[in-house]
Length: 192
Ligand SMILES: Cc1cc2nc3c(=O)[nH]c(=O)nc-3n(C[C@H](O)[C@H](O)[C@H](O)COP(=O)(O)O)c2cc1C
Image (cartoon, rainbow, N blue to C red; front, side):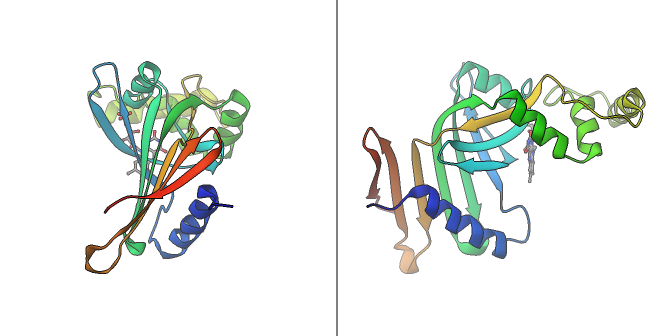
């Protein structure tokens, strides 16, 4: 039996959780919209496994709109403390409402209110306007439960390709590539 890339991911992620100063789950998310031009930003991975890698965001954001036009993404973890990176690529689909509701409910109240107050990726006239919107939503929900905004949810990147990169001496770095095939995962090496 070959190596299971998800098990290997778990091992590296557990090591990163110990050695990184913060946010070992921070990953770069690259998308491209209709015009084919890439854009990239950091998001936090909030779930992972053979079915994919999950993050949450505003679906009307730039990334959300790009994914609506072109539901494919690339993810990158770079753990400087371990001198490692993991690259993941694959198609993207929304998580179901129950999962998004459960995650939203687990967030702090401030983050929940922020999700209502922020028109993510839209031009903002002033910081004061944002603060006023935050005040307005906190009065609107007035201590009661904050429901998940309809435009706020999660996306799952279903990995078709995962590459584990490990720094080695003399720049003889190691690259292990896993590609999904009909028979399962195929493993190979790449020149560094
Ligand atoms: C460490 C870190 C974690 C972040 N996590 C998230 C996240 O989980 N979801 C999110 O929407 N934005 C997150 N952001 C903000 C994004 O990088 C980005 O600014 C925002 O989502 C707007 O991106 P867009 O205009 O390309 O859609 C995070 C930023 C940093 C630096």
